[in-house]
Each structure stands twice: as C-alpha cells, then as structure tokens.
Image 1 (spheres, protein in one colour):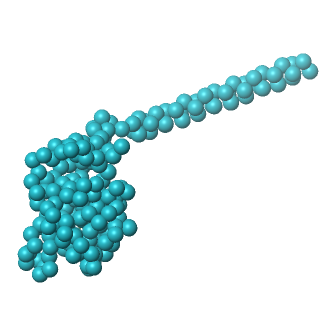
Image 2 (cartoon, protein in one colour; image 1 turned 90 degrees about the horizontal axis):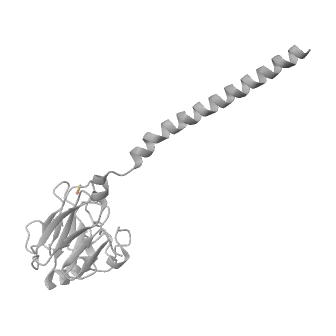
Length: 196
Ligand code: FES
C-alpha cells in the first residue's frame, strides 16, 4: 500500500516537472519567436533619418520658379508664386474637381484657396494622385496643351492636369488634388515634415 502511494507520489512529481519544463520551453520558444519580430520592428537609423523633418533655405528661389527637394523619398515641389499666378487660381475654380480641397490631403492651415501658409509659397508633394508619376511644372499661360491654360502641372503618364495650387482639373484620371505635407515657414527657412 505504502509502495503504491510512493509510486503515485513519484508520478505526480514527474508530471509536474514535465509540465514545468514544457511551459518553460514554450516560453523560451515564444520569446525566441518574438525577439526577431521586435528587432525587425525597430526602425533603423536610415529609416529614422528618412522620416525626419528637413530644413531648406529658400532665399534663392525666385518668383515664378520651382525648386524640388526630397523628403521621405518623395519629391517636394516648392514654388514661389507671382501675383499673377495667384490671381489665375480663381480662373481655374469652375473647371476643378475639388476646388475647395474638401477631399484632399492637407493640413488645416493649407485648406484655403491657395493651399498654403503664405499665399505666394506653394509646398506640395509632387506626386500625381492617379498612379504616382511626378507631374511637370508648366507655369506658362500660353501653352499649346490647352487654349485656356493659366499655368499648373501636367502629368506625363496619363495627362492629369493640376492648377498652380495642385488642384486637379475635371476630366483628369487623377482623383484628388496633390497632397500638401505638414511644414513650417520661418522667414526664408522652410521646415518640411514638422509644423509644431
Ligand atoms: S500617373 Fe498621373 S495621370 Fe496617371
């Protein structure tokens, strides 16, 4: 009788040991499985740098001209618009898909007719909202591409047209106005990617 009790006792101890060992091994397995996942989630220095704000001196940018910088692997168009360009924006309104930019991607301070903090300075992600090509800057008002053309952007891939605030014309394959990134402007220093 006593032998049976001893045997039971041994069996119970073995089972506990097995359960504990299995649990511990499972935990090691889970930690082992999670560790590479956590490692892969940690942004590399390169990714951090790519998503960081960039600063650009725009003092050399002349009226009516565009400069392009790269931010988050995207071209950022910076255009110093003339008074004439600003006046021409109103002429585009009846021909635009979303003249008030209600469906567009832009910060609140760019939700106005010129889509910018400073009316003369357009800062925009230069990526067509159709399939992602880079529209060309066509500031001229007598372009052969359209008798009523008053300046804007023309996408070379499928012909989407945008005005000088990046608002898309009706009839273009692009569904939305081009995106305005968050940015700050301090004098002639533009900070792209940060607007605090
Ligand atoms: S990508 Fe611009 S029109 Fe298609």
